[in-house]
Length: 368
Image (cartoon, rainbow, N blue to C red; front, side, top):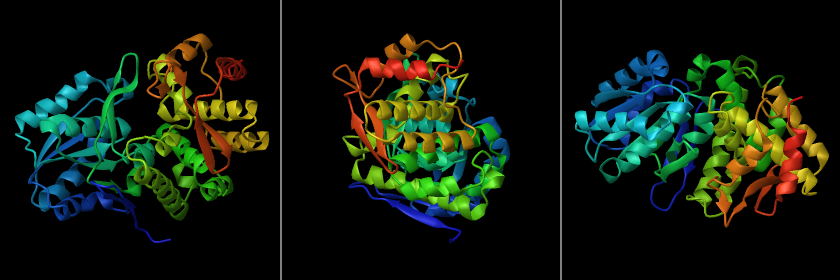
């Protein structure tokens, strides 16, 4: 497989490319230059990521003639708030960021989401380029233009659709990703295999391990990244603003978000929440006779191989989950919409899941 993959996200107004290339960080300046954007750049990151990759990104941007300002935000989902967002606005104001300027998000999903939302709302919209540094951001959060911050009552309740001009993925930066964060990203990879790409699912089944980057090898990693990004790009191209098909990308997220929120974003991370949510959704699909129990077993095997949980964390109450589901963005006319698998590689969206079925499945998933 070629060392570089270029995937198009084809949209009516703002098409762009996802470029997956080793040493991509050194190309951020030249690739930004080719987009013919203004000279000012606001680079948004967090201290840990910036310590590893800030210098390389700034050197590349400066060499291409860009004037670079920096905004560092605290790391972690619990800082994905309107108060933290204010820091980006303050930096944009201090550095006289103009409408022709570009925000560059260098970091994981939290940095990407907040930078994207700041770009959507600063001067009613400036350009954003996503340079994701976590597996989860590379294959999911950085693609598709969903941006936002959390409200105390729920995840990503405040946001906007704002497509990037470019998503630049450098697989080499994953070498410094903490192993727990790598495993979290694998949850989204498994998701694509279940809902969209049965060949990706088979590729994951054939891998000796999914819980460590080093165990994958360069070629398998490149294929996982490419197939995952292609799945996201294909869905987003067909349904930019989640009017229909794109909702399938929320597989595992309905219960996953509730678990994240109820544990204060401190007990399980996003990928772990999605893994728990996928385990629940598969059991719900079983209970509703939508797919076979052997498929649930195959999914459970992959989630476990990736070192991810399939049971609810201790201390969480089922009634609290059911209540939180009612504040989810995916609720329509008081009914929770679930993404449920029908076979490996295909899924449906339905609001026909009874509270009794949800409660029964969650009771099965309580940690002993």
